[in-house]
Amino acid sequence: MDENKEDKLNIIDKENNEQKISNEINKNINNKAEENENNMSSNESTKKDDSINSNTLTDLSLSCQIINEELAQYDVSFKIIIIGDSFVGKSCLTIKAAKNVFENYYTSTVGFEFFSMLYKINSKIIRLQIWDTCGQEEYRSLIQNFYRNASLAILVYSIDKRTSFENLEVWLNEIKGRGSPDVKIFLVGNKNDLSENREVSIEEGQKFYEDHKLNLFIETSAKSGENVQELFKKAAIALNKDHLLYKEMASKESSIKIPTLEDEINNFEKDEEETLRKRKCC
Image 1: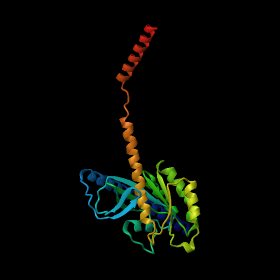
Image 2 (image 1 turned 120 degrees about the vertical axis):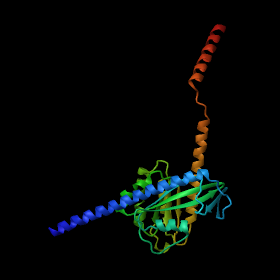
Image 3 (image 1 turned 135 degrees about the vertical axis):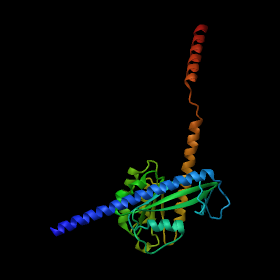
Image 4 (image 1 turned 90 degrees about the horizontal axis):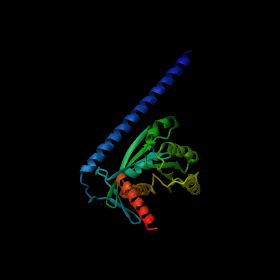
């Protein structure tokens, strides 16, 4: 009897803890959303300074620069979520990109961590809002809010952990089922510095990318930094390109003149006059 009572108490404690975590996550999500709105309002009224010291990155004809995050001004912002199993290096990957720091021992993320990075592409400042989510099964339902309004999902597996690759289908189905229909998806094979322990070949990663028609496949190392900056640079360029194409299409649609009722009546009357004229002449 005492054991049953203790089990019930443990279940209640667990439910209470999960509820507390859920409330905290939702609270933080709301705070971040409010912060983003305030920043966007501030940007509209603040003149941007183009003379910023930064590390220059190039991609074909585009000039892409990493901008100091202290300059909290930008033209457009995109939401990116990092998803995948626990211990594949999602947090290490993000921290390496945002802060150029790597820690050999890192505790598993509970809920989420938030980072932001600024890029200057040609004359525009692009802000990446990066949401690093937890991968534990027990918190899976708590991170569903992160899928909404995401412009890009970075799907991460570890090349030395076969199960993380096999679980990609689950994560892919979640983002396609709960995310935006036009969300971009990048596939990342992390920890390629552990090539001697490789359990997933490059060819397998490439095949998954091709079979599921994803937008990018790349292998990275959060430890050595290989391809880490390249990954987020490509994200900024791809999202900005889509944004510009969308604006161009919207501009073309707005330039198309939609006939008013008066125009329709005038056209109808002209057609009738033309018909009568032809009848008379015949």
